[in-house]
Length: 236
Image 1 (cartoon, rainbow, N blue to C red):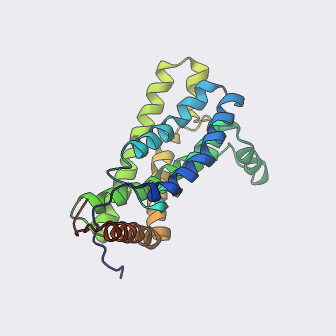
Image 2: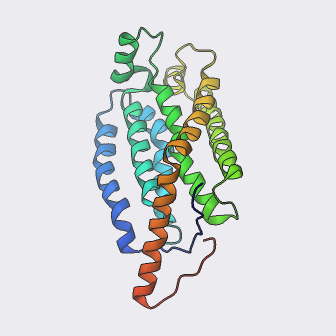
Image 3: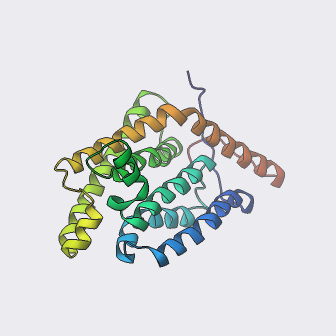
């Protein structure tokens, strides 16, 4: 059984900002250089990286009121790098995917499957932390059910975005972004992998995520004690 966790209000501080800023310092030059030199075109790069860039902007805008645990920030960083690799080459032409296709005699480049697995895996921690800290939900069956459900909904909505982009863009640009590579079940696979990814994240790193949240609450309590304030239990 997982130990109970009771969220406390947490405010973003300079000390708390050091870890996400260090990750951003690593990401920023990677993003800039891949945008400048991408062989797949800057439009494709922008389309593929737009969710990650929007997510980073939201995390930065809400940091003072709602800083996340360090595991969440690390997850966002790794997820962004996965998207950057796909956006740089385009998912159908990634060298890693081409190597796997030749080595395992696959019919297509499956790096896009990695991207959709990641779409469920890494956001699962964000979804879970928001639910734990802003609702009465605590680790248990309902939370374990709801997190993959929300991840599946996000994966399904992303399929709508890919569809709309393919309709609005020129055929070449739309097909490159869609990345179905002739697979008629591509959308279904993508949604299924988002579900699998989120479920795997909870199974593999659920306890580590709770530990990371507890560490965040402990740092907040210590900071409040140092400044003479008090931290009370309750949802943020």
